[in-house]
Image (cartoon, rainbow, N blue to C red):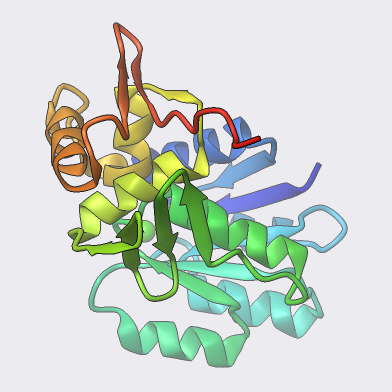
Length: 224
Ligand code: CA
């Protein structure tokens, strides 16, 4: 099991990332300051570092410079706030491998973590299919039975989540954290609203309601 070091001083975000990664089979260690991050980030302990740029003690850029200078080669995914584009570019020059802008969706973070851990040889599939529906992750195009469907960014993200988990019952809470991230009120009915939008655009039977549990994208029986 690959261990991931998470350096993030906002407890809510650190918990969101750590819980999600743990649920997907990773072991995680969370530190809330740059001094501990730099001390713990060693290749023989961790397969990947998720590094917030704005950390107390020692900022993310100094942590990155320090561990690269020491010769650690683990992939580093930096977390940046909106408006930190300059810092993000500097991060790449210092040896970061990828970055995520806050707020981000967990599914997106997970895809990047997996891609980094597999190395550059592996490419994420760009087409997701279920029944008549095809999502192209690169062009963000969606077709249903060959016909192009216009989806908003949120609708696309929700459809993507369903297509990545065909036949699984997904609770509202799972969908909220996958699509809306940690910045969302768990009491909100936004999931139900967006499921309705998707049904309207992709067909009423595309997503099933599973009473008291959530929603499911049935893939049906494969053709003989
Ligand atoms: Ca921070």
